[in-house]
Each structure stands twice: as structure tokens, then as C-alpha cells.
Image 1 (cartoon, rainbow, N blue to C red):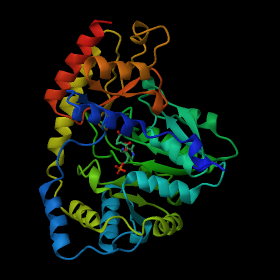
Image 2: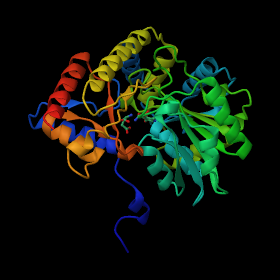
Image 3: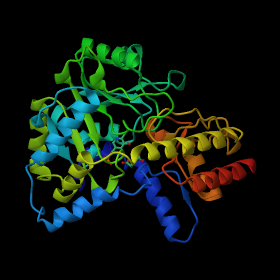
Image 4: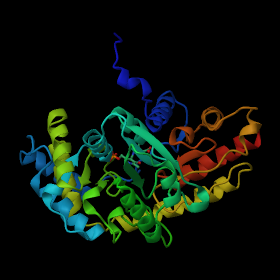
Length: 394
Ligand code: PMP
Ligand code: GLU
């Protein structure tokens, strides 16, 4: 009998967390590393939210809440869902979990039987396939391409469907590509999913971070909506710069919410009470800080894309949303060695330029790298200069 469960055999540690941890260790050892790996806002949680949490502690909000979350917070999430997605929502269609990641985990645990397939447009967020595997499901990657702004087409979806397909996972704006579905694209893929009878889980954690003339379109915007089958993942991590507070929201069919609540009640009881109070203040408070953040991200994106495209062998498309760029580095790899990969290139950049990036392979995209621009303009400029200088020596 092996010590560790065989369930873990097919699971990789999170690549995003690993690179960020390695960069942190090097920094602690005195190496001046510029980090493009951590996908979290560098802004501070707005003061009114932090203050609300302090007040909540003093007011004694330090006990358990119901497993699915505080009623006031669920009501606020339901109201926000109606505002953002135009869909009337009841509080029992909402669950509050420990981050959006945990919403997804509970969802897969609630929905999947052994061998059920989850279709995931690829490239995708590193944790999706492993979460599906942990829940006994089978991740099935459906390719998207830069030519199509990394959006899943109905044809590409149809090609991977089997009799075991159960769930389609959408993520717009997308980590790592920054791709966004417009209304026509969203309708097309949702209609196809419905015609096949798939459930849809839509990770909309980056919904506030869209640039240029792009608009966020929710999976719930589609007219043909069969609401019961569409489950929304949202949260406060990105919109309100609250990654460490660990609060995410699941919104959808009551039966699914009830099943997820059963899992949550047995696993964690409830998401941290003080953080729920902070999330309530976030949802009820002003959003006046957001336009300045979005405009700052957009300028950083422009600078980073421009700088990377100035490096021979790197081609960086302009992403539409989130805070990542996802350049194609295939042309530079042969200069590193005959069989060099994006993983080698990322390691080489860390050693030779003191710049931390995440390789594309764990996102399902060999030959690419991901850089997060949730870092200051000064560091972005310095990081690109270092990369350019190192690459020139190749
Ligand atoms: N989904 C995507 C696409 C993400 O990039 C992230 C951030 N790592 C998450 C979910 C997890 O968000 P949270 O920090 O709220 O768990
Ligand atoms: N959103 C982040 C990222 O993709 C945070 C790390 C994680 O949750 O994987 O880098």
C-alpha cells in the first residue's frame, strides 16, 4: 500500500505557484529578480474594504457562518449578478467559497463521476485539468488559436465531444491568453454546448479587466440560455485586489449549489468569516478605484507587448483582457539548443536575465511563455530591457 493516495499520481503541483515561489526564494537570497509570474493585482485592497474587516473583528464577527456563506453576502452577490449579467438571482443560487479556485473545486467534486469528461479550451489556466482529475474526471483539451483570439469555436467543440462529455469550461477573459469572447462567439459556443446537452461552467474572475473596445460577455448573456446548465464562477480576487482574502462566488442552479454546500460543509464549514465581511463591504461599496486600475493595466500591457515584440524571436499578440501577455517564443528556442523548450527558456531567463516568467507548457501551450503585467511600469520596462539584453547574447 503506497503512502500517498494514488489519486495524486496524475496531479502536478501548480506551475504558477511554483515559479512565483522560486522567484521569491531567489529574492530572499539576495538576487534581484523581476517577477512576471504572479497572477495577482499589485494594487492594495481598497482602504474601505480593509477597514470594514477591522470593524467586523471588533464587532465580534469571528464565528462560523452558514456553510454556503452569510445571507447578507449571498444577497449582495445575487444583486451584483443581476446587475452584471442581467439575470434575476436568488440567494439560494449562490455559494461563497474560499476563492474562485475553491468554487471550481467544489463544482467538479459535485458534478463529476469517475470518467466524466470536462472539455477545456486550451491554452487554459494551469489548475483546471488537475482539479478535474482530482475529482475523478477526465480533462479533454479543445484547441483554440491566436488567429481566432483564443476563442473556442463550435466546430472545435464538436470535434472533441464524446458520449462521456459532461461539462464545458469557459474562461473569458482568459488566463493565460487574455482572449475574450464577443457576443456572437459566446452565443455560438453556448448554443452548441446546449445542443449537445453539456453543462457549462464559466470562470469569469477577470470580467472587470477588459481593454480597448472589448466588452465582457458573460456565458449568461446568451439568449438561448438554459440557465440551469450554466454555472458562473466569480469572486473578489481580481476586481477588488483581494487575492489573499480568499473569497470566491459560485452562482447557478440550486441543486448544484446545494451539492457544493454539502461538500463545503464537510470540508471547511464556511469561507473565513472576516473575509466574507470584507467581501460584503467590497460588493456594497464604491467601484471608483477600478477605472484607474484598468487604465494602468492597459498602459502596462501596451508597454510590455511593444517591448517583447522588439526582441528578435519573440512574437507577442495584443491580449484583450486579464493581466497576462502570452508571447510565442518558438523562433528563439533553437538558439538555446537543438531541443530547447519553453520550460528551458523560462529557466534560462531566470538564470540569465533574473526575470521570472511561466512557461506555456503547463497551460497546454508549448512554445509560449506567460508574463503577468500586474507589476509596476518601472519593473516592466526594466524586465523587458533585461530580457532583450540576454536574448541578444544568444
Ligand atoms: N481562475 C482563473 C482563471 C485564475 O487565473 C485564478 C487566479 N489564479 C483563479 C481562478 C483563482 O482565483 P482565486 O484567487 O479567487 O481562487
Ligand atoms: N491567477 C494566478 C496565476 O495564474 C494565481 C496563481 C494561481 O492561482 O494559480 O498565476
